Length: 284
Image (cartoon, rainbow, N blue to C red; front, side):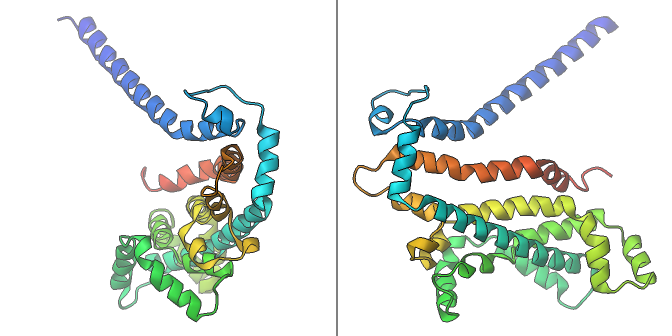
């Protein structure tokens, strides 16, 4: 075998490898995107065309009718505003607390630090459904039942968020920079706020997306503590109309599609920062 033949075979294997990887990526992208596209298509149909038999990928002409039915069966925009306010406030407070805790665990030395970190990471293994009854008992004892505060406050101290910020501080914030700021006379709070926090933007963007999506999609906790129609979030409202007779599924799918748009907008806005935060420290 000549050198040119060997080079040709190596290049052929490389191209085939890339082709296989691209095929797998295309399949995964299709699996991920298809449910969103399918819900948008169904939002343009009513019950008659939706269940007429077969799979119809054509757009319907019932979107205006579905929107009218959506406003009749639920206070849709109130639910959207409730979800938005809970998600924004909860995410902002979570970014503050998780960044402070992650920074402290990454830079300070104190007794019991490793034990605290281990317990925090171990708590991530507990299924959320197991904490539902204790969560309700605590909320009721504090008098926070049927309030939005009960939905976002318990989740502002996020173990995953603290872990993420801690790892990001270790990988991306030089200790020499912290020592230099202290030599310049900066206090601990000033060092955190003016020196460390600007360097954490990619990590904070990643955490913001994760936390916002979690709070927006949260269903169990609002279902347990919220019972007033004017305080319900959009996930409760959409689920509440699915058990009624002759459910207008076109309206439900339209509401579902609209409720997804804030998440898409958030990801498109902060996707670059999120990728930078997830890959921080991967390349030295």
